[in-house]
Image (cartoon, rainbow, N blue to C red; front, top):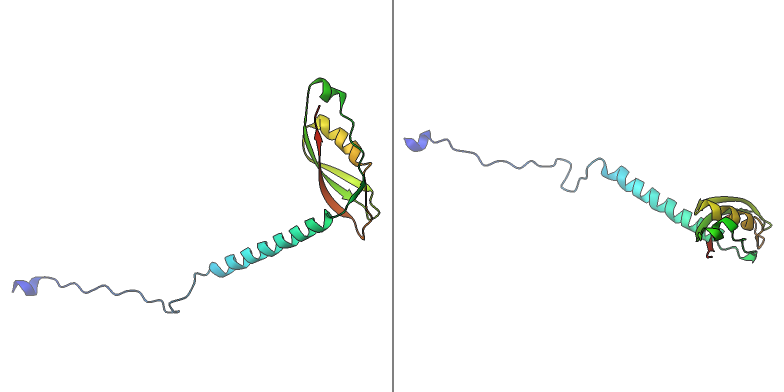
Length: 132
């Protein structure tokens, strides 16, 4: 009688995925598409960067070391982004990093640089090292 009073538990049933055993969450496909799109964009950007920086420089006058930097023993690197026209002249300079005292001298020098002609404008990243 005791046996009949003991509650018998049923074995728990496993939930079965109705869509099949290999179904993925809904967010998986958009995430995979986004990753693929980012990878494609990065590869195109790297290709454009490699193409634009392949221009050879013809004339690169050195910058004058600023007197203020010399007196204060300031040294460093100035990174710049140059917009070079199709005929090889530097059209625009954007300072990406470096000491402002040194950057002005680097920009002045970069505006005098000449590159080989190309079919279109190029964006080139250059750096100038200042040592006293």
